[in-house]
Image: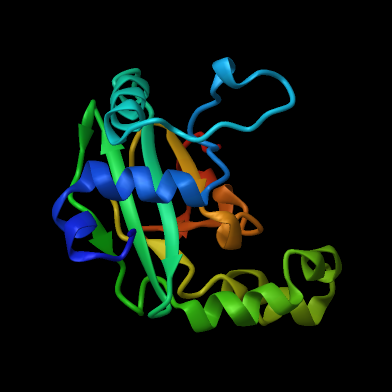
Length: 169
């Protein structure tokens, strides 16, 4: 559903499909009770919530890694769900994510050596793990499960870490 022509043509549908892949992290569903997980009841329910939250000055980036090793991004900004974006391989690479996942974030604990510092290993480890959307005042990243191990503050935006440029969650 997420990578279908229908979802690409209808950003609210893509948002709904991505929300199903994120363990419903964009919103909690209080009517489900404390022990029972609930899924969104409609495309419009998710879209309405996302529009309202983004209207509070928070840009929402919903991220999903699809089978073709591409990153789909649905951005909601100022109450508007923007067109679905497929990030270029230079911006985000599924292969780079696989390589990163084999060592990081755990390896960051040992990057305090002179060799690691001189080789700029930290920055190099995050090459091609970014998005192409411009800077905002605040950003909420909603990654699907496979991407949740990548800390939101380390996602590259305009060549810099998101967390160094704006508050992120």
